[in-house]
Length: 137
Length: 161
Image (spheres, rainbow over the protein chains, first blue to last red):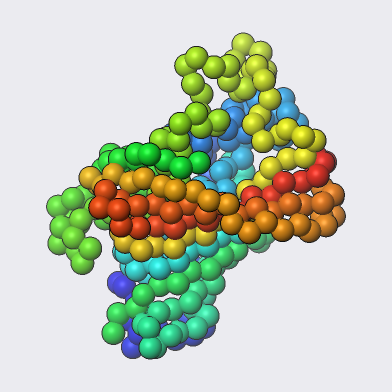
């Protein structure tokens, strides 16, 4: 259900597990769909040869998965802005939870300012961000 | 990098939605989407990242006539990873989207990129850090602006161990 200005309050929260036990196959799916074929994301042999523990997810996959929580919360075609800062790498096997908090509501422009934090199974934040969404009357 | 032509295709949107784990039918089912407020299938909020498929000579896509730097017979292929030149490394720090209109299958986008602000900061491990904004405006076939996408990249002075 899209957000309504009559029921939404500053401080309201929404949480979603956006991926459980992230698979290498999903990272490969994202490489194919996005067009970013950097081997650090899809080539385990290469990643180990340059000293990494293995492949890791594209930052934009984390932003994309976090975006699913946002659109679940605000509804389709309601976002005006969506920003992310990449705070840590995401590895195969990670489980990520996105947490959205309503920071403020602009009643004049029917708009909500949201704060976003996505963290892994150890509680480490991997993405922090913000968004602005249009509300219904 | 500016893009001359980025055709928005329904199958590409569906595959992108699958890759980010989103089963919302607004990204794949045109009959369902017809009866929603937006009235058609639309692209997910970060879909325009897939414009990389339409960037000419995009360095992170294998090309038939050029050596690739991933593993093949040997552990590492020919050449070095792009972005690792000059002693430091390039990192992707932030991404900001501003939405002006929904992006729908059938749209044909083009983009114009410009450099935004540039600033420096002393890092703890990588020496001096240089931040650079890259602002890309995406327009549709009617020359209407649909999305503004801003990337902040950071270049370290030396390799971070």
